[in-house]
Image (cartoon, rainbow, N blue to C red; front, side, top):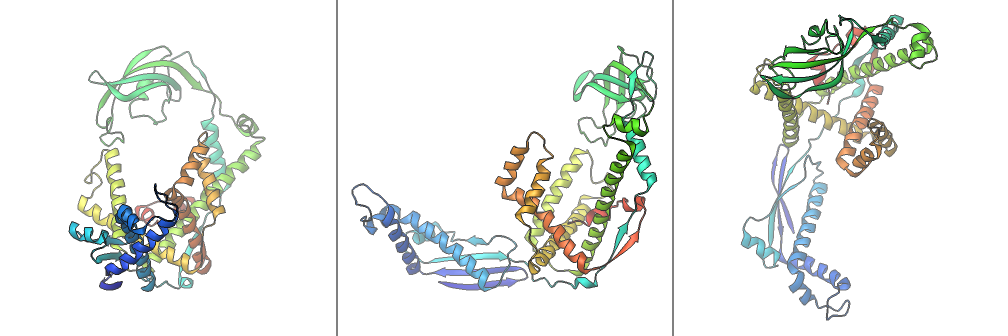
Amino acid sequence: MQVTQTIAEGLKREFQVFVPVADLESRLADRLEQIKKTIRLNGFRPGKVPVAHLRRLYGRSVMAEAIEELVRETNEKIITEHGLKLALEPQVKMPESKEELEGVVTGQTDLSYTVALEVVPVIELADFKTIALERPVTPVTKEEVAEAVGRIAEQNRPFSEKDGPAATGDRVSVSFTGTVDGEPLDGATGENVQVPIGSESFIPGFEEQLVGAVAGENRTVTVTFPETYRAESFAGKTVDFAVEVKSVETPGVTLAGDELATALGVESIDRLEAAVEERIKQEVTQQCRLKVKRALLDRLDALHQFTAPPSLVEEEFNNIWKATLDDLKARNRTFADEETSEEKAREEYRGIADRRIRLGLVLAEIGEKNSIKVTEDEITRALYERVRQFPGHEQEVWDYYRKNPGAIASVRAPIFEDKVVDFILELAQVTDKPMTREELFKEDDEDAKSTT
């Protein structure tokens, strides 16, 4: 067998492989001898079937298997001997001529084929000790806790039935059916829906037209949905809702102190405040982590500029682009509505795809160089967390992940990324930076694009 490299341009490699018919014949003979020992055919004792007879019966299929095995072994040898890291699986191109293929399978002609590879570039990692980062530090104040408890109290405010007409601040329970020009609109129905008047949680105009309604009343509420409404079937349409008012409720006194805590099933207001404070601290901690992680990824991006494998970038871009088009369609929006053009959007998202692939390769290289691995216990714990999000379907979700390597990979990837980030942060120069809650949770487009 002879292997010759024919292309070495950028990240592309191509090899020409030539296998003499004698080598193929030798592999075929070996496989037929192995089959002879175990096969059972009528008229022959076990192990006594002539090889020539086996060749007549199974020669073509066994040769095909031998060629498949040879190609696999050759690919592995090429990768090992040239020290290559592949971006994608090898692309094998066999002879296109039916006559030539027939000659190879029947053991009459030599085999000649090509192997095209796209490789991962050699990545020179930066000195992480030179990376300087600021870590946000945001204390949780008593005022924040008090405000959060106040919101909880408002959300759990008791309501009682009201005999008179509904007013702003009241809660109305309604059933409704929507029509457009007299024709029913799919999805525009609801049963016993609670509408807090003045909450601005429904389409503009809906709540206001329920002011003055009384229990048992039927009235028509007409609203026009915005052109940008997320449900395309509703966007821009004027809908007449036939509304039946089931009940009108007025808010009672907002509970406070231990009375509020008891109503929520908590021992005391102190325990409730402690629980709220802990939840806020968790949110702040997660956001601080996200901020410093984004800053680190930005630095890694700046320090590792190289050409990413084009096929991986194209695949990532296609995923991003499909999600973008699906989102625009769902929101009934166009690129013009987003103050851009399709051409500019493509350029922007291709840049994002390139960044994601490069950062993914950098993180993988750091993990490999420093023996950072994700353990089975870590994956199992993460799976438990995901399964808990689907009460009543735990076993079904668990089986799905365990039976799908791609799904397990989606669990492993964020764990691995976080472990690599932690490793770098241990080496980097990280200083604390006081930050208000408003600054901490302020989001912008660039922040969102910084993630891998």
